[in-house]
Image (spheres, rainbow, N blue to C red):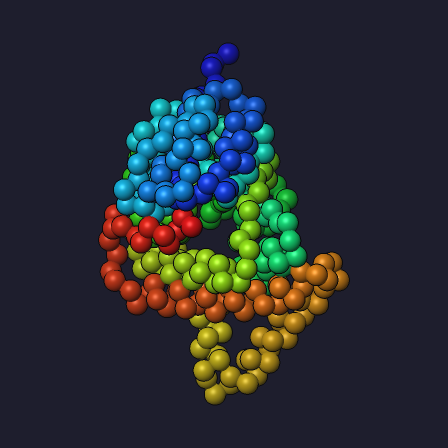
Length: 322
């Protein structure tokens, strides 16, 4: 029997002391024995992130002088000695069989990138309301990786992702100009190198941000960086990404009144459904949906009108790791 491939886990961090311990504990609890190393790319943390990471076995901390998340990934990838690279973020808690399932999915599919759906970890009604908005088709659209269950299948993108080291080297790593949309931008390029494969067995949870202000900043970044990817790869634009800009146009058009009434009806209708399932979370969901739409739309416009593409340009360090 051929030996199983070795794995390098890579993780970009910046001031993640509060979240990092449970994340690294989950990586340390993996049932896949061939994890060779955990590479933590530190973007210049000023809390105890670096010291905490260095206290774990197999962890090697490398410097990420440009500070942002895709730059950290690009710093970690050349350092990786494993046959396969598994990406993890500090806000993620991976299941004990996560790495094993990633390796199996790569072997079975021969895809360029594999990953699982995005599940959410919530502890308060506020977080539950935000998670409900993000999972809703009304909120974040019909992206396959936001839907739970189903059969393994090829999709346009996945949450986080794992790939063979030789494949990511051939693809040229992550595009730093795309900022927080680096996963989707890489996935677009990967379509011609084997595609992107979603396997529901690859399970993890994402720690939801607390509050509407962090949510607004997050979705502004999503919109801005999606627009940057569209500018670089016009063919990556999908119909669902035009819905929010179309809504904005409708709200300033002569038909703004019926457009607004229809929009409010959709928000109230979706909130009413949530109120049946989780009454405490429903008011937060009702506020979160327009917050997401307005922030994403503003970010999308900003990304379209911003400076021209420069694939290796640095992104402000606090934008995409905090």
